[in-house]
Amino acid sequence: MTSAQFKIDADALHAFADGQLSGEQRMAVERYLADHPETAAEVAHWRRQNEALGALFAPAAHEPVPARLSPHRIAHDIRIGRQQAIRNIAAAAVLVVLGSGIGWYGRDYMTPTVAASDRLIDAAVTAHSLYIKEKTHAVEVAADAPNLMTWLSNRIATPIDAPSLASEGFAFIGGRLLPGDPSGELPAPAAQLMYENASAQRLTLYITAALPDHKEAWQFETRDGVEAYYWANATVTCTIVGDLSEAEIRALGKKVFEQLTWRAESSWNPAG
Amino acid sequence: MQQFLDEIEGSVPALRRYARALTRNADHADDLVQDCIERAIRKQALWKPTGPLKAWLFRILLNLYRNELRSARRRGEHVAVETLLVEPSVAPAQPGRIALAEMARAIDALVAEQREALLLVVIEGMNYSEAAEVIGIPMGTLMSRLGRARAALRAATGAGEEPRLRTVK
Image 1: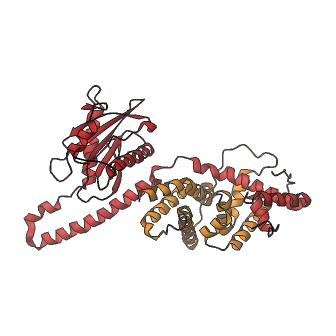
Image 2: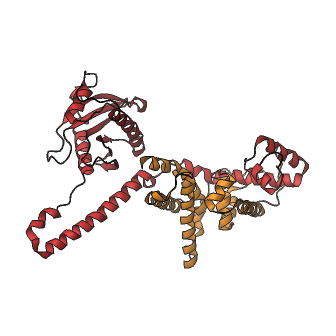
């Protein structure tokens, strides 16, 4: 609508009441309304309607969002549902095979396979609970030790750097090497990095080399009263564990994942 | 995927607000939003990143709401008025203001299609073309629904009252 075409009709009056006019058009409507008191009264009423509607309904957007409306959680539930469906089909297939006489040998197939991510999350939560209680020996190697991250990168065979979480109030206090999964099915060993904030809350990152599938994946879990946020890509798996709100851990997750990937994709030289 | 989810997350407060205004029932509204998010995630492939994600989400929400209305109407269900009327805890209306309880009743009495349109524009602050797109109607239709909604609200909330014309800057 250019000013040449601008016509003061009902649409223009609505747009005026809704604050959708440009400065020039707004002034034109104001001039018009000054000369047409009846229309002006109507438009004024519309604006009061808008105010009343705002007072009634706007506050709902400022209420805390319940966890069940987290898209991440919903996506996760959908994924689990699908996996479950696939597992059910697989289990049914196994049963058919069993029924046709293989019997005894089928036993092993009946053992439900726990997803690699679930096992990594379990390991991360266990390690977290074990070490965050420690006052003086919380970490094996302090953050300021030279070559800490080079050493850990070499041992877990993937390049990592300790993400800076200072902007979230968490300081890096150090790390340790953990044996990880003994079965040989998961990447091992693992590195644990520990962070602490001003109120002595501790956060750990449990990092391993990538899973064989190299796929990008996320998972959010609450286990044993702590929140765990798992993430995997072609280079690493990392599980953030902490006794924090889901929103906080997600915000931290974003920082961690950005920084871990950045380093991983830039300049790591295992020989160096 | 992660970015897609983050973007949805950014729209959740607005979706809740709109759903709440439509349904006038907090739990019901959150159920709708949950369905909406779930559908968006399952149908992510259907979303063409040419249009804004937010508009698409609102379209899904509105469709879910309409589906419900349709099936509720078919079953001849009536929702108890008590569950709908969430009385806001605000001071009584001041002169020249519309009493909120009165407005809440007036909104409930609107024809559904007028309510959808008015709330998108007023509560969600969408411009007219966005709102028309979300609802799936031409702009002219949107404007006429808006006009009828406002006339109905005016009739219901103080047509008799002498309004003061404020200087509008």
